[in-house]
Length: 219
Image 1 (spheres, rainbow, N blue to C red):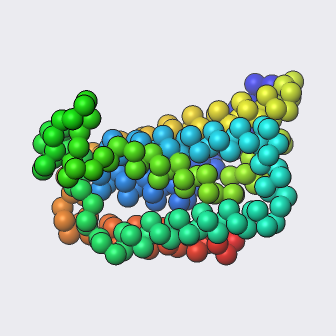
Image 2 (cartoon, rainbow, N blue to C red):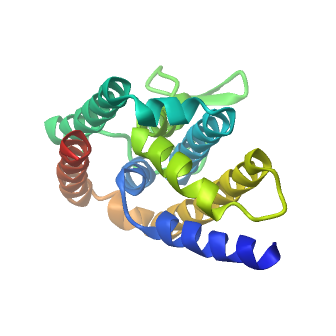
């Protein structure tokens, strides 16, 4: 069983490392709003994977993968969300707050009830929701889980238990990979905080997100 689990972990690791919409979203949040926002986005992505994993173990994801109409609806909703994120980046490039500064050093920041507010708007939940919604509206995860996990499930375990174990492995790999990626980006936050660089990056990420949205819609 251990050999089968290690082999499945290798396959999941390769799939985790392949660049996709998640990485583009994390890149934008991390370089424009700092490491904290990047990590919250990663957390939202992980929760989205757990939701799809729970649906897969319960057998509901298989119904989605088998229903062309429902799959199309979720796919188009996900594509529209990615395109909306991309258009927002292109519409006002460089308009996001500067890269994460030490608490209290951001212009207009003030301490309120244990959390920082900037410009009068709470900003801690947006990153988490962005990662969560992007994953929940990605029906390819349902197809991936229902089509691949049963074949990778280690022998000796019940199918549901084996798939649940692989979902947890995939979530941990995603957290490790994207968390490390956010940390690497944060090391260069001074460079990304430059207005000209931030505007160029916003435009690039906008094009990338729209491209992913179009690819999801037409796949």
